[in-house]
Amino acid sequence: MSQPLLSLDGVSKHFGPVAAVDQVSFAVDRGQVVGFLGPNGAGKSTTMRMITQFIEPDQGQIQFDGQPLFEASRDAKRRIGYLPENNPLYTEMLVTEYLDFVAGLRAIPRAERQGEVDRVVAATAIEEVFYRPIGDLSKGFKQRVGLAQAILHRPDLLVLDEPTEGLDPNQRVEIRHLISHLGKDRTVILSTHVLQEVQHTCSRLLIINRGQIVADGPVEQLVASAKGLVQIAVEVKGSGVAEALKKLDGVTRVEAAPGADGRTAVTVTAEGSKDVRPAIFGLARDKQWTLYELHQESGSLEDLFRELTAGPTKP
Image (cartoon, rainbow, N blue to C red; front, top):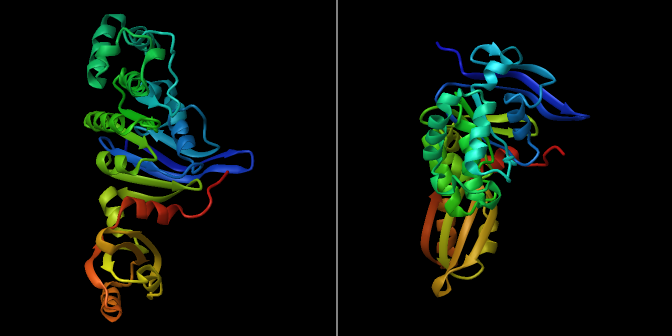
């Protein structure tokens, strides 16, 4: 069996008394696109900064392609691309100047630079702003320039920290498609708060909470196996609907909204171990409600995330 491209074994990082990352272990194989989720303060960015060697772990070991990261150091950096959350760019530079500057930092031979720059410009679709100052660009184009610099040296591992933060819905879709395309040629670790991006982009999911990994596996498998709660969509015509549903055994939450023609649309959250649909049907019969809809929805990534990250995060 081939060794993983990246592995973390018992990695921890403290800032004063706070354990930002606590005994984290996982491995990432070549060609995977891994979603890295967690609430604010959970340890995502700290983990990614250790992987990219911006900070060192206090304990544990990070290996890159079978070699300890601290030993591989310079060679590993040449094979890792990184887009930090704040996307630091030299805003006074033209895009062309900036990419040429980054190519020099990445030690790309001058004879090859123009070809490599042309490649990333095409890949990130920034041709129309190539000769414009970075400071004049929209947030979406700035993110594209950040991605361009991250892949300029053809990294084996691409680490993206909140790449769609602050973008409008259309820009998010564009960057999501770009990340999916980039994931065909390299290993990607994607940190995001946007759960839909993980479902549309990633094949594997890691969830971190309070500095520890609380879930690791294929996205669909984790969602399907999420235990605890299910949601049931109910639409009825009658009185006292929400109050009556709340009293059913196994129901934990009821959210109601007025519908058309005097109907009430309700989302019932119930314990996953108990099917409450027969009880809802019986209640509707006894209350002489007109039942228009009774449908149990499949588990969602949002449900899984809430289940695994409930409670306060570390400061």
